[in-house]
Image (cartoon, rainbow, N blue to C red; front, top):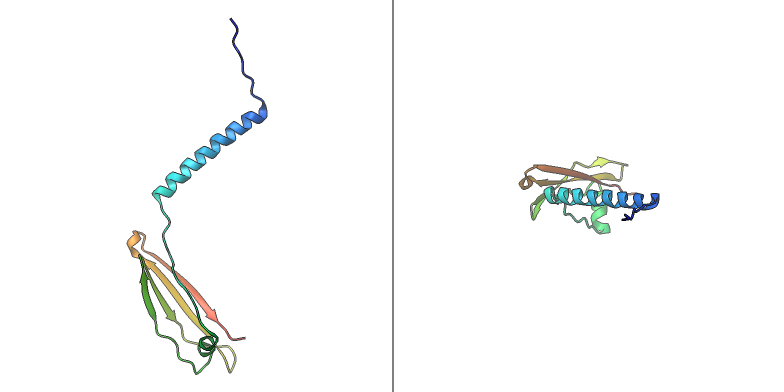
Amino acid sequence: MQFAIFQIDFLTQGLIVLAVVAALILIVGLFWAAWAPADRIAVDLITMDARKAWNLTSPKGQLPPVERYRFEEVSTSHNPKPKAPDTPATVRYVVEHRYVTPEDGEDSDYGVTFQLTRM
C-alpha cells in the first residue's frame, strides 16, 4: 500500500498563507464596518461671484448674517467672524462652518474655518 505524499514548494506555501491572512483581514474589516458605520459629518457648498468676494473683503462691506440649516442628521451653521484688516483698502473675511450631529450618539461637533483675502 502506497500513500501519496504531497510536497508543497515554498512559493505555494507563501501564497496560501497570504490568502488566509487576506481573508481574515477582509472578514474583520467587514465586521468592523457593520459595527461602526461612517458618520456624515459635513454637507456644504460654498459659491460666490467676484462682486460678493469683493464686498466681503472690503472694509465697508457688510458681514452676512449667521446661516443655519439642516441636511438629514447634520446641523450646519456659518458664523462670520469680525473682519481683520489686511491692508488699508482690504480686510480678511473669516467664516467658521460648524457641523453638529448629536443624533449619532457621539455628539459629534466639527468646525472648519475659511479665510478670504483680496490679492
